[in-house]
Length: 148
Image (cartoon, rainbow, N blue to C red; front, side):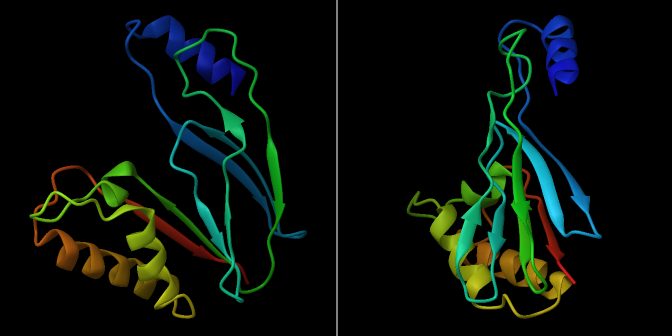
């Protein structure tokens, strides 16, 4: 992360930066090591419905040339759901200019969390489209992974 940050800082204009989430999943131990560089925190949804937000990390890359990033580690279990999303998902608004927000995302996921990953992605975008009534102004990306 330090190398990526230095490279982005050196090759970007002073008012430019990027957010990113980087993780390595170790299948044998079901451990996820990660760094969140200013990105929307992915969520881990446990089978009991509890949510863990993956926030550990630091500033977006490119802002500070020598930023020291903190690494987070989480033990994932069978049945856990990992969900990452872009800001276009939670910042989608309806005709009354209300944002869908984290609560809209959380509700959409909780209504279908036991389904396969592809069905969860579909349900999230269906709920988002209904809320925004087709007024999506920003890119919206969702990645869903189920731990087996």
